[in-house]
Length: 396
Image (cartoon, rainbow, N blue to C red; front, side):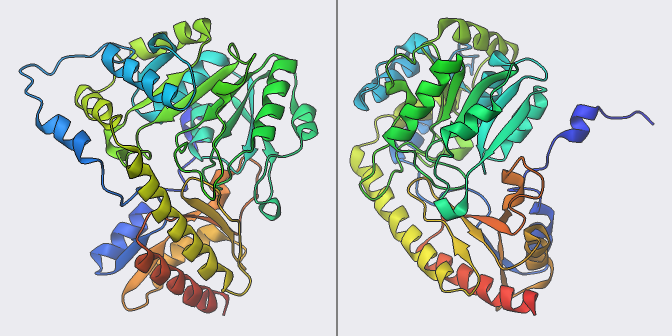
């Protein structure tokens, strides 16, 4: 029988999606599954984005430009200008989701066996993108007891070697919800300049910074023009996950000329989705203020309810809409599967994402879960109640 590739065999499963078959089976058997596992907001997509597609009368659904339409990229540049970030349309390339932007970035900066340093825990698919490109992820550990703040710069420097090509951060963080301070961003910028590395920032949750905190983009750092690469997306900002529109932003012309070759190989980003995303850029600021207010309320409720459960430790998110909780168990994978297969409260159960898949270091995060607080407060409270009863039963 023909064999699959070693690369394919080494591709990690998504901790967010790998338990889907068990959830589907639970639903087939009549159970209600409350999804805490995936960052799919229940916030309504701005109506103007939906209307833009409905009101488009195309006679031919053509390819778009490889780098995305000129009008759309001009409007993206205008969006950044509103955030005091000066980039041009030529510094922007539209991609099929932030995921493709990350894959193109990795493919453009590193060769097989090169290394990228990433604070862990991190967005699980970074492991997948690195594996697909033959790149080694070198993790630097951030800790729950420190609320997943940036590890000491000395810890980064110890890991930098001949094969190091970049440092990659997610700001605000998925799965931690941590928001890097201006001081932390400046330290990373100085480190990238000192060692002549790329600094890649996944900033897709930029609009979601809480408690009066300010998001600090690496694109604002002077002297970092040739080193900064930003990955962005409309998915979470406008609750448009299904549009699959993201973008790469960098003032480094050689990097952008390289990334466009990867983009040419996949032809172009989707036309209708660009139409919706371009319209979404006109969303008024009060939309984000209302959304942030709702997420803060959900965060506060979630953290408060989790802290009531004996033995549970939880980090307090400062942005995005995720948190990491450490449970009084040994194996979150086993617990998460057991929840779906065997545990019910009034025929309801919950689906969580085991956090081990958000680490590169073996056996890290084994007792942790990631929770996405993208559901209304009533369901969040009910979900935590089910978790509390489940832990009591599971621990025995």
